[in-house]
Image 1: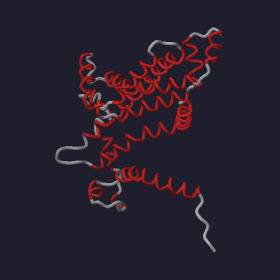
Image 2 (image 1 turned 60 degrees about the horizontal axis):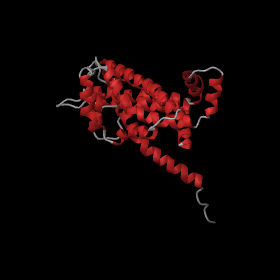
Image 3 (image 1 turned 30 degrees about the horizontal axis):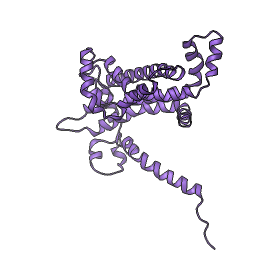
Length: 277
């Protein structure tokens, strides 16, 4: 008797399982290594012995005097970039969606054009600009820099999202006495929450993980963020792998927590944007 062929669902889920195994294996190794001592990590063994597992890496990470400062700087900058990107992006998207403006398509193309260039090409112009504004080594300078990176995506995405919202809602609210800002904040914002979540999450993650611009614009511990702080665990004579892996895990946790909170809104927002585009 011939054996039945595997069903399509079995093949699909097997392929997905293998894909996620390859995707999550490096992260699992990172988390496991954060509980290993340096000798165990450098031994080359994939799995450590029970005697080699320790919490000492995390204890030493929090004992480093500047680590909490790096963590707070990352949170303050990333959160500010998220709020500023969503606010400015929604204002610009509302204007581009609801008003007839000359050169609107040219403006949107010009806003998106810098995204096609490697960021390293604009490092010097950004540094010169921030230096002329006396914003080098300041939180505000980093916030404005990261916002300029994330704003074009938010503008494009939210414009498409607002275009899909019926204009009759605006007209009904205006007839009832709402101002333009009232229409935006009281009518469109509640409808566009999934899109706003996508834009905010994108801005937060980009700012949280940025190393390139922070390495140039930040020149003291008072403004350095976690990606820069992890570099202090390395010296010319020693690489403290245990502290690096523990610090990396601690840096990943806030984005994972944030994703878990906005997961449903994020998925529905991405799906809606894909359909409406």
